[in-house]
Length: 308
Length: 303
Image (cartoon, each protein chain N blue to C red):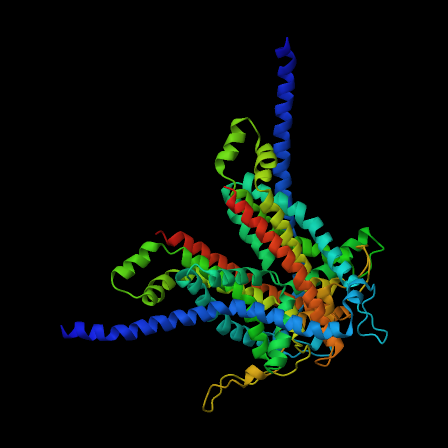
């Protein structure tokens, strides 16, 4: 008697649970889609407003009081030069720090202190780095509001990302490779520089590209160091036809970068300038998304090809 | 024999070189400590100058923040309320969506879907924040105004919503890591008892991973609190002691941007205010980050 009463209940219960299961699967897809749809909406919105502005003229003109005459020449040149400084400062320092932590560091309190600091720095808001740069680079070291200051500021921001990515890549190299090198009489540095680093190159490159993509889009710390927004000239060229061919004068030059130019245009009330902002945003977005896609591709290829 | 002798002669040199390299690498690693020390030193140094002029009590209890006016008030509360409101709205978006996305990707999605979706979600993190600011001001706000006609052009709501979507991938990836760290045999136990995937996810996996999931929320708050450009563009730059998300307000970060856009002389009280504000911001994010990392460590040690 009990059985006849429970059997349909049980069926109903199972059906209900299965329905809940399927309903949640649908909800899960929808929740995941929110992010993806937003990304799509953002790209379409920028493209609709900004695409008509993209022309040869836009890339080769300086900013102007007249929206339709304004361009992003000083902004993209500034971005390229600042990123050059960032790359040369952050990559050697970050890779060296990561190699030390993975291959050399003894287990003691100094190592713990370094590890805690790397983790913590990754969570510090970017604008705080801007305040650091304002106090340290601009005033204490007297580097001014220059390309050098900006590049070093972004290098500090990129450093934790480079360190974490390099550590992961170095850790993924199996111990047998190192032992083989030691067995042939290699010193520690020979092992690291000739075996471990070449094998972890793909992973390091992925991390470097992602960190640079993030640095390109950083606005707040550069505003904090007082980056000017109206720059209608280019920094001195790094290469020249006269000896000594190479000049570093550009390091001390004032500058503007893509995200600051975009911020400047978007904070103006006139709608024509908003179109310029969309154009600059589109270029900026294309740069960062391409870099991210490249990093994802390298990681994918590397995973597929290397089987230890 | 002679080549062997030469090798032995090289040994001390080789040893010194190895030692030198190790020392240089150590110096590079120490740069992380130096950066933290420099951040703390500079924020403290300028803040001490600030607190010589402004008593700490005024800073914490005054309800007005008008350092650049002739009638100067230095109460951090309006900036704090703006910061917290933006973070709350952002969490209102990121917590439910991030959690559901994490559960879906960890427990429901086929391997192929997960491999395809995760990199695209990562792209969401790669979009420059100033672009999100543009999107919030010129797309989300006009869209919201169709449903909420009273919404002003700058508002906490639209900035918070966009930051919320922005931090979904961050919240979901930390939460998903925590869920995937739950061992398979625990799930299999639930399945063997006849649970559906949903029941397993909700009653077995989520409770087992709860400290990691909470860590994801806390690290998400820290992100939202430190976010600058979206608020600077879309929430207005007017300090406003309000708990209403439909109003414009300034956050701590937005205030720093606003001051930096002007031309304040080095060493003036106005210049020092941004360091006092920055110190407050650093302390808040530090608190959340430490709590988040402690919780994350707990779920890693659990099994």
